[in-house]
Length: 120
Image 1: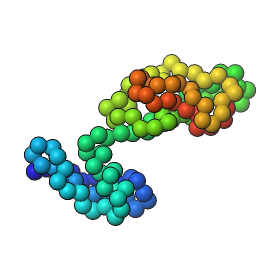
Image 2: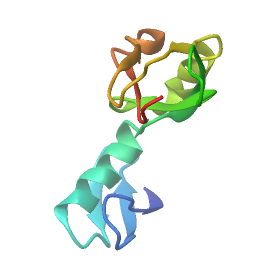
Image 3: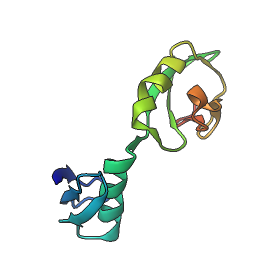
């Protein structure tokens, strides 16, 4: 039997959540969460961790902005985060850029788009 302790990030409380796993890797219990979001977060984090990737990319054609902030439009598997970052290494955005514009579709074959989080 294995126990993993996590700090939940789904709400401002930051509950300390303990996930107990059987020898075969199945979850037998989740404790310490104050809400169902904490239970779901802990189960997902132990079985299929995901992340949102945020970074910046250069902007060409803008008199005021040299970079624009971007993020994944959804979660990507934690093991693919560096693939996403590598895929963005040579990406540039062309002005004008608006919040929500897709800068790179289906980044690294994840099915998730990279979108702008600021106007440029």
